[in-house]
Length: 143
Image 1 (cartoon, one colour):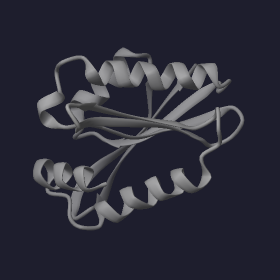
Image 2 (cartoon, rainbow, N blue to C red):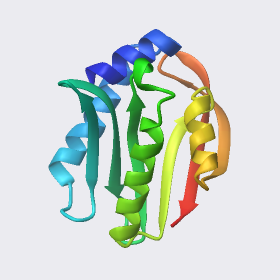
Image 3 (cartoon, rainbow, N blue to C red):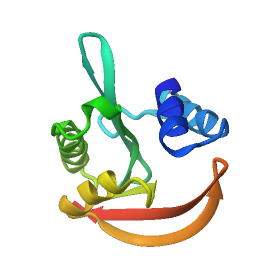
Image 4 (cartoon, rainbow, N blue to C red):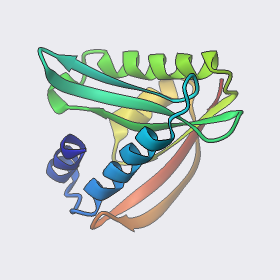
């Protein structure tokens, strides 16, 4: 949670409302995770966290990709691709038919990664979130 807050504050100027959202998502995952239906990955090297991604149950057919993050120094090395592929494969193996995610247009590298892995942009709208004017996006993929 602290890593998410720091990275988004530094890179995009997100205010202190972002950290509690990430904490709530993580707390909900810990409280409600269903064995064999929800899973999270944390990539690390020599004890340092480099990134994360989570697959979260929404319904029997639908999973949500959550908390996908790479620290800046881990980007561009294929780690994001490996995390995304692992998450999507887990969702397929768990029997989900579709995945969704929510992000912002400013996360251009992540959006390009989603597109290259078959995800489709479903909607895009301007919002005021985390102290910033952003373009919120919803993406999905049929598994």
